[in-house]
Length: 298
Image (cartoon, rainbow, N blue to C red; front, side, top):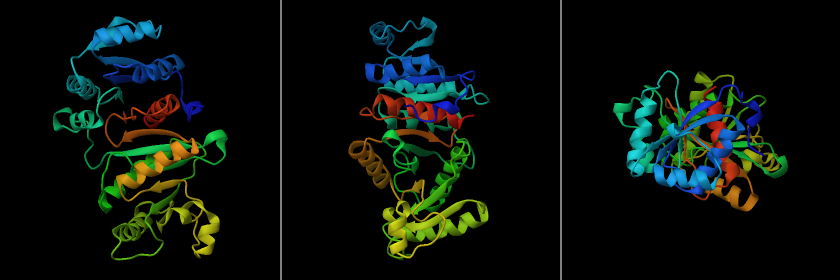
């Protein structure tokens, strides 16, 4: 099942730039998203290859919905240039078959004005469990910010709160992850957690934001009880703010590969949301990523 699809108004199809969709695995979910009625795609890449793939997929897309490009760098430039011309009615940008750093290094160039003053980009993963055996959780940031300092983590939290405001019936319980529930000077993530909790009391006084937490204390009420941790987040967290990209990336991929979870992720904080799926992502993950990115713009 595609995550959060019921929250999308099908009458508000999102114009979307699909960057270098030159293989079946990157193009097939775009066809499904288009036919499901929540995006209007413009494909940017090698026209000959794309037309062959369209034929293979029996997708009769108008020829004016394809822009020819010779390589992933050119595809990224074209996409970002087009996005820069639609600041007031932003495109959604979806990564096809290309390296993430090629697309994102183009996106952040000042000439396109796709960054928002006073904000930073971050990645959000919306995780759902098979047969809804557990309520969804959000993990941020496990794909973009490598080793965020406390200031960047503030932006990560702000971006998550903005996204969750678009999700009906999602009451965010935000846990700042470390390896301990104690504040230890030698463990920077625990110190950051203390600072972030203090900051949140001023900037987000109505939100449940606590930390530091080890992962078990964040999601297991039994573990939190044993450790004597008592607050609204302990054991009930549905948003995990991770200390670094290795933690977030590993956590998500463990959940996907060992627990059959679906990861729907996108980059937010800029003018245009960006879907940067992995080449190994499933079709449901790719579709869910697009839906969540569309939802973030509503």
